[in-house]
Image (tube, rainbow, N blue to C red; front, top):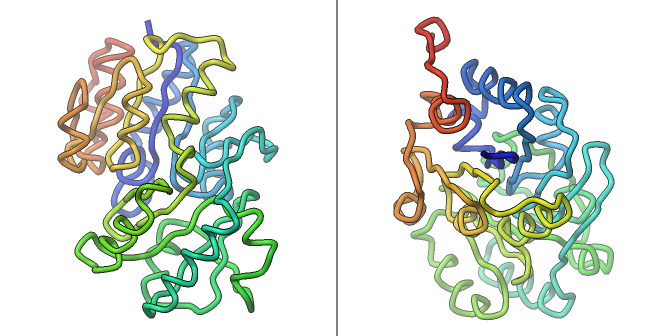
Length: 271
C-alpha cells in the first residue's frame, strides 16, 4: 500500500498552460482523504508552487528547485544543497562570456537576473517571479545559490558545452524544453526524496511518484513505483513502471484512480 505520493509539477500535475485540471485536482484531494500524504517535487521555486500547497493543504516538507531545497509549507528551509562558490563564478563567467544570461535561484526561493533576455519569458510563463540585480556575481549569490538556470533548448550549443565542461562536477539536467538547470552534484529530486522518506520513517516501496522530465529520473529511482505521463521524455518512459495519459488529459488523475485508489472514474469526472 502506498503511503506517499510524490509528483512533479509542470508537464505532469499541471497542463500545458500550467493549470490544474479538475480531474487531477479531485484525484489528489481523494488521495489525501484516503490518508495518503502528498509531496511536490519540482524544479520550480517555493513561491511559485505555494498556491498548490495551499490548494491541497499539504503538511509535509516539499521538494523545490530540482531537489536543492526542501522546505516546509510555512516556508522554513529544512535542507539545502548550494553550488560551491568557486564553481559558481566559473559557470557564470563561462555563460556570460558566450553571450548568455543566467538565472540564479537562491536558497530562499528567489530567482534573480542581471540582464533580461527574451528566453526568460518562458520562466515567467510557468508562474515564477524574477528579481533584477545589478551584479549577479555578488557574494550573496555565490554563497547562497541553489541553482543556475538557462532558458535554452537541447540543440543549443551551450547545452553540450556545459555538460562537457561541468558535467563531471555538477548536476546538469533538463527539466523541460526551455529549462536547463545546473545544481550541486549532490542535489537532485531523488536525493531529496531519499532524505525525506528516511525522515518520515517510510520504506521505498510505500512511495509512488509521477514525472515527465530528465530531472525526474532520480525521483523514479528512489520510488517503489513510478508513473510517467505520455508526454514525458523517452528516457523517463523507458524506466517508468507504468505510463499514463498526457498531462493535459489528466494522466496523473487517471493513474491515481487506477493504481492507488483502485476506483473507476465516472464519465462526469472526465469532463
